[in-house]
Image (cartoon, rainbow, N blue to C red):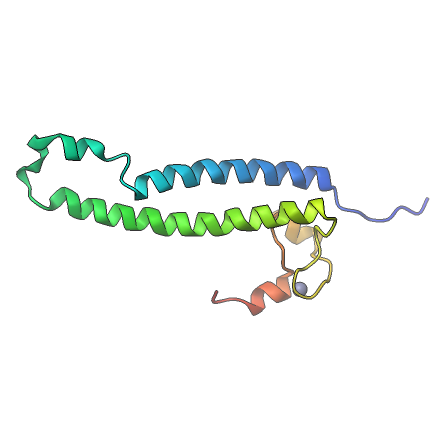
Amino acid sequence: MARKRTLDLEKYREILIEERDRLQAELKRIEDKAAGRDRLHSEQAGQDFDEPGGDAAIETVERAQAMAVGASLREQFDEVNAALAKIENGTYGICDSCGKQITKKRLEVLPWATLCKECRSGLSGM
Ligand SMILES: [Zn+2]
């Protein structure tokens, strides 16, 4: 029986949806942190201000780190969503750039890959 080698899309869809939900929760947490919403206590607790500037400086660094992490998470979140959209429109596993099949091995490692290895490495530095 000649059976076309197809990807197990349901499996990848499940992985991607799980990953999307995880990233969404993580992004929410990080955005709250970047916005300083988990730091209200330091504004309310006057007795913590015996080291003028100390808390604020740490906060600034933490917010900058949170924003950097948030930016890379958002990037990945966009990739996961793009891969999910490709499952919906039937182009999952096909490179966005050259139209070649992305290897199954690559998709096992990076289920949200939308570029083949060659095209992705051509973009390195981005
Ligand atoms: Zn390609």
